[in-house]
Image 1 (tube, one colour):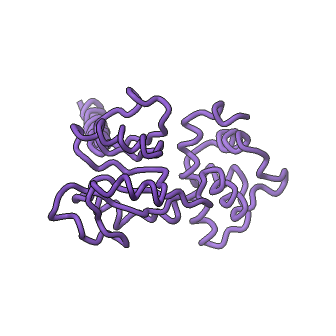
Image 2 (image 1 turned 120 degrees about the horizontal axis):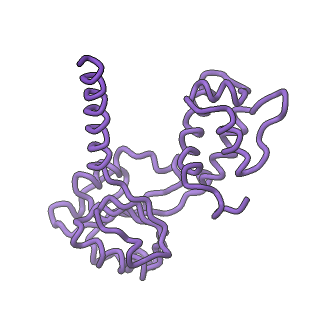
Image 3 (image 1 turned 90 degrees about the vertical axis):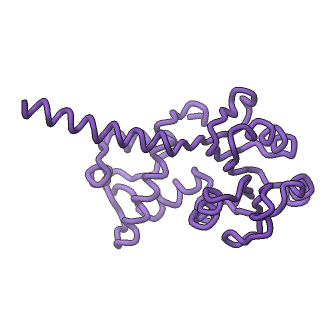
Length: 218
């Protein structure tokens, strides 16, 4: 099956498989069946087999899956065996938290630079890197060739800065702004992160549960 034919829902389940298999490996599991894995993850065994079959034959009939090997294969599918060079645009509170607390090396990336316009932030250390003035961005990109960028900049700056980053050879974005990159750049790879939306969904879930309970009690 071609990469383009694999549904987004399958791709978004892969990191969860990877995480669960890592936990199983740490707990001494050597092999596991699709049924056992389904019980632990809250999925059906059929769904798990269908997901894995999108990428090849990983299991053996009568044996199940080798936990370590399956995790390694999923890691390769996700590109975790590579280290794509990445920079952060915007090193304020959010950018600092991401640089400090995200384990990039185990997520397929290497954080190599951070940029900001605020003179109070430029020169500070975040994680293992020093925040640079955005005026140094072009020369940095020419020398170190980052392939991806994290956008932690104001929405009003996002379009201009994205255009500039694309012109410097960056075509993958972890986007924390509310600017939709795909409107102007359909060829870029984008993962949009809307923390407020996620919190709103949690609010809905809490309130919908309460409404169901109220209806049952009435």
